[in-house]
Length: 430
Image 1: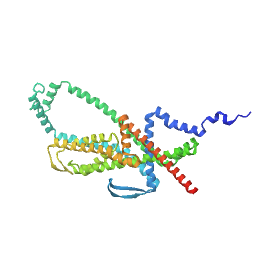
Image 2 (image 1 turned 30 degrees about the vertical axis):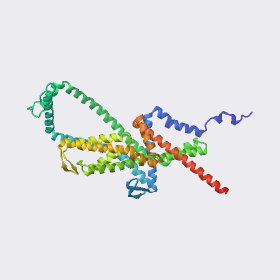
Image 3 (image 1 turned 120 degrees about the vertical axis):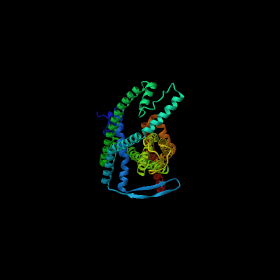
Image 4 (image 1 turned 90 degrees about the vertical axis):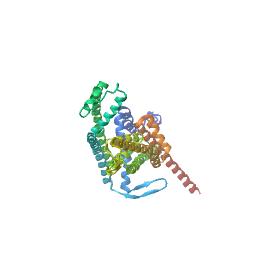
């Protein structure tokens, strides 16, 4: 007696294509997420960056209009420039640019920090006698007010170090020893930090190489991905929706990236205007470098404002030359100490204001407009995840919001297609 195939166990089993799709998801998504989370996040971030970058490659190949200028709600001043390249040249240009940026970026920043540190040390040594005199004066006043707490400083102790050393040893006892121990501890931590930074630097370089490889083999990678999904989903409409959803999600990542770039450039431009207008005593080259770095740092959601304030503090307080003015010309000076405080305070206020503009104005307006999301949706997404799960949680929040945006656009497209189909049927019936 022949068994009815409709009643057999085979009807409840997935197709061979479905098995491939399940293994695909398990091998590259679910199992790595649970068993190798750090490695999975690293490669996922690399792939998503390449996914978001690819539409810009295609735009340059087809001819992309790039707008340069200033745009507000009321007016726009600028012009469009059309840029078009061959695909092979565009891929090579972006790939090598990423590799060189990651490969040389860290050494260049380290060199600038080292040069800034050397400049600070030279300036500090030049002003050491003035600093010691001011310290003696402060300690003398403290001794006059509280003679039992602050012993008298030896004014004839040569450079003044003997009197200060006696004061430290008599008043604070073992502070010097504790300070030495702290220095040793911080030195060990510093070595560990350098090791971590070097490891992250290597990962960034590897990511740049992987992104270049993906961009160069994009058609093959996409064909493999679409073939797995097509084999695993038998229903034509569901398969079409899944593939289209992936395209819309990729477009959302691309729009977010270009939106971040626009926010960063806008902030950099405002930094230039602020630093030119205020008497910070900086050269034009220094202003451009600081504006570029601070603009791109400030544009990072959640932590950008805080990091920009820290960088502004470091870059300004390590310059202890006296004078307030413009482009190397001093207009007024209140003494090098007060000048340093004033310049540092001004730069930190600028960074703080830029952080507010990024968080509550530019990012919601610019990125929200590109993604078709409201200002409240963008702010809520960033704040909810940033406050509740930290910086990396905020990244997941952004990806989830992009997933929502892709689903919304897919639904709108299908509704438009359905409405168009109904309209065509009505016209045919008439």
